[in-house]
Image (tube, rainbow, N blue to C red; front, top):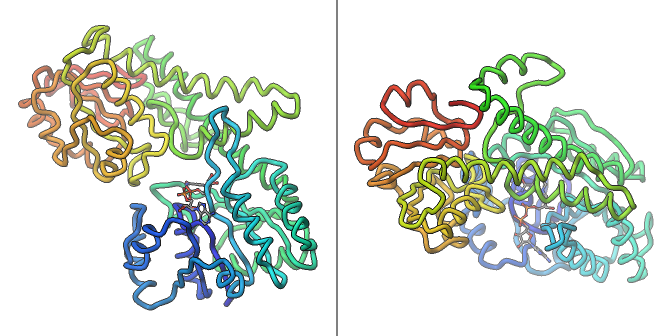
Length: 433
Ligand SMILES: NC(=O)c1ccc[n+]([C@@H]2O[C@H](COP(=O)([O-])OP(=O)(O)OC[C@H]3O[C@@H](n4cnc5c(N)ncnc54)[C@H](O)[C@@H]3O)[C@@H](O)[C@H]2O)c1
């Protein structure tokens, strides 16, 4: 049993809190968002993820998680302190480190005896040196007063709890052998290989992994667009590719592009990091460009049916989150496309199983509807932007009866084109007719 402090109880922080408590550790948490902490104290999770409510409720009821606003209390009750605050993109695409820097300042100021500082936030190369400098500015000595490790997080939203318990690998970027042993012990209940690297290699592993996943998505979108022009069904092509072990099946689903809080931001962060070193990473740049191109494709498709000007067109949107099984709409392309349609004059009604509350904070002049059948009412076109299984299970004959024109643009290839067309719909997917 270890005494663990966790700073930043957001998406990643909360999952790590619950996982480490579940392994029998004593965990104390700190977040600057008082409202979030109040909700958590009541057992209410701000993120919607499979199994999270139950895990949170169980641990709150048993009084296993301590919350504090006092950094000194957190420090004195921790042997290992995790930093899980956000590192959002700045306007120019580089990484905003202000949350990490602010937390490092208050740790450095208040540290009294030796701690391991484990960074989970995705940070660019060069940040660890900055953090070391902050500690040294407060008279704290590396090895003697503090040790810093970078442990990248690879969990996927929508599968966050499952991924915490079933990681493909645990990368520990650290120099001190004792620190490495402590961190290995902490994560030893997980059945995954440990990859021990230099801290900066661990940082590059995180960025390279996300860039690679983004590349797969942009790649298959490119092939889908080619398939579409030849009248070939991309899903048949994927079926024939994925059995090749060198290729595999993951992140090979065509759609509207990659969104969400990580892939785009991390790809941009990596590009900026390379450019700062005087290197132009053309492949990475083209992955981003392809993503922007893919977003435009779906707008073109809608306009190919409804005309260039969407003024007064009744368009209905299914899906607002950046992927299914989460309520996260950060950098959601579904939301971005909805905004474009709205700004082009379309009358929008939208539905999403979990994301509407968050979406309302981003776009408030759209009508939100719990019932997808009400969404379809009187519409000229139904656009599917997130691959929720709840949408796949809808009664599309019932939907067709209430639509003005039976047009479905399926941005995520959720539906079976043949079945949908047999119902009398005009259907367009991505890379399929
Ligand atoms: N979300 C993911 O799927 C994912 C996956 C892998 C890695 N990451 C990385 O993990 C990090 C966190 O991402 P997230 O999605 O959990 O972010 P988040 O915005 O959900 O959570 C960050 C939390 O930190 C809190 N915070 C901010 N400043 C603080 C401070 N000074 N003191 C205490 N708390 C503070 C915020 O209130 C918030 O609750 C990012 O660097 C991200 O790139 C995220």
